[in-house]
Image 1 (cartoon, rainbow, N blue to C red):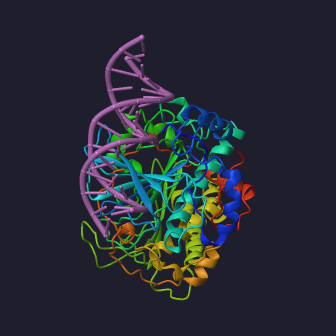
Image 2: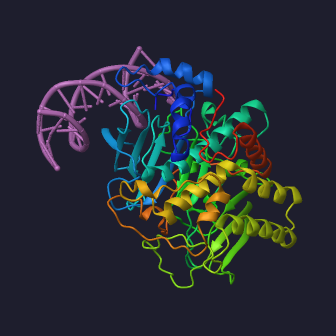
Image 3: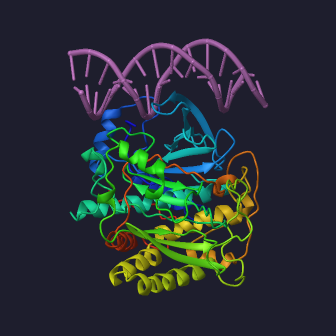
Length: 454
DNA sequence: CGATTTTGACCCGCGC
DNA sequence: GCGCGGGTCAAAATCG
């Protein structure tokens, strides 16, 4: 897009900080996206460039959805549609209409390879309180964006080789520091095809490859390949390669991706495992002995360890993550620092916690479904908090409403991340990013709206 | 009748 | 400089 005015995270004013947001917005975001109407594209860019290297964080959500658009709780108005090259399906452009001045926009497009997958890309930050139904999604995307952004800022501040890019365009690449963290919020699936939901962070927009691209995080809720690092996905490779993606650079020695997926191969109710392919992939989740449908379109629930009714998801998750990491270390001789970094990243990064919490919330709480259960305001102030509210075994009701909020977390087989320039996080990067976001943002803030220091 | 969607035109950045 | 492609505008059409 040309309008690059701010790089803020995408949104989110979770109920918790709506008030703050209002203010924050002014400064952090004041630069409302392109002034409605008079778009001064160049002007904004300037602002942007000052603040964020001219890049605006985007969060792309891939989810199976049979409806034209995902119901994320917000009100959107379509303002344009266009057929993008490489994809026969038209891309629709929406603008948030909850508030007239809200700068948030989103692009919706069907995946060319799998029409059942809807790719929704959010950009901008809401400058108004969001309906409860929309907070989950907003939090998730916001947190994801925050991570990405914080990573970016870190990169800028430290010339480490973090974000080396995968893209050919220098401008684009530059910045994302948190590359390739893959979070798989898995839900039950079978061994043959576990398909969790993954968060891919790339430094390049897959939907709009404009050079001026913004770092983009992809939340892949379609779930595809098991421990699959996106690299294992043929589609992924295909796309990335098209954009001069160089895996070798993404997977430097110790690159580690965290993949919280379910694996049925594992006997444990809540299992975790590492898999290494190029890098290490941490998978976490439970398995669903039952289902082994290839296209689990109906597996819309996230069931984390149904056998531990009293353990909070977060606690259990962290414990297991840690344990698994160490276990793997022994088995696979992983470098200690790798483990430490990964663990640290997971446990320390509030952004991740928020993202995970939000995702879980949306699933378990079923909040984001059809428009408006304002009473169901699940305030997640931290994963711990979330954990307290949610118990293992909570099953998500697969709501099939109008939107796709329901199928949001459905699993599926082929996920084709048509991304370009996806990068995987290196442990050190993860740790850095984690610590960074920690210091940068008052942690505890779930929806920490990234105070991206402009 | 107001709000939303449709759709062709226009603007802008980038690569050649 | 030109063409291409992404993104947005805005008038017309449609919907509730």
